[in-house]
Length: 186
Ligand code: FNR
Image (cartoon, rainbow, N blue to C red; front, side, top):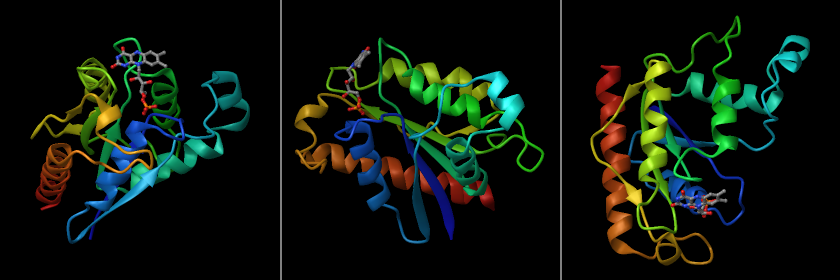
């Protein structure tokens, strides 16, 4: 069984990115499970806190999920043409080394997508993640680009995808990444 972890970079209850992530989770192909990781509860990074108490529980939980997973999928919102601070902050905590889990992202297959109500569907935010994921030594999958634009008309009020074309593109994205991860494990 291949295990992937999916993480949304939004704390909003009605988040388009969380809705996209949950739709992706529901599309996991046979032989693949996708677990939901959350950035909720992760405090702002503080080196003094880290020195005194180590990695906070919420960050440690997410870090463990990533360490155990065969691949990671990020669902990123875009703020001011860049990465939301809460999402980057979560990653920063998770990349702090610890004796038991040293470099969790090293060699880890990784895919990125995102949704926004605007016209460009998180294009710049996704691009902004790339140098970070390169620094962390991930194994990026660039099989297909998925920028979900005009998200207000893609999801209904329950977060269900109502746009058939987006649903199809998301399925291609999930299946493509899952195959890449399975190939990487051989
Ligand atoms: C935004 N939003 C936004 N959208 C976009 O496409 N490009 C952008 O540069 C920005 N900038 C921006 C800055 C800030 C501070 C906020 C709060 C919002 C709109 C953003 O895409 C929208 O709020 C989404 O709904 C956020 O994603 P979730 O929470 O729905 O997943």
